[in-house]
Length: 79
Image 1 (cartoon, rainbow, N blue to C red):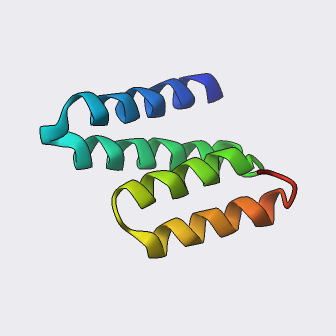
Image 2: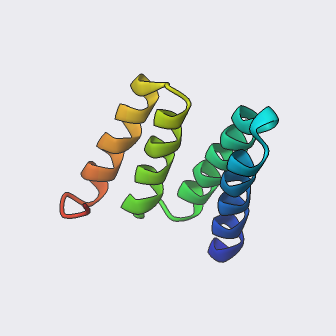
């Protein structure tokens, strides 16, 4: 379900900040989970924005920009 994907992604994101030794691994798991969510709900601009934010935390600005752009393309009014 959508709620399960969201819960799991948030869980990995929270672990990334509580477990600095495995930060990157948890952030990448959060990205994978959010990407799975976009396969179920491709019209959710917030999900693309969250993926972009996590890529920014990983200093992968090229990927971050792609997802921020997908967010805007999905819903130009999403802020």
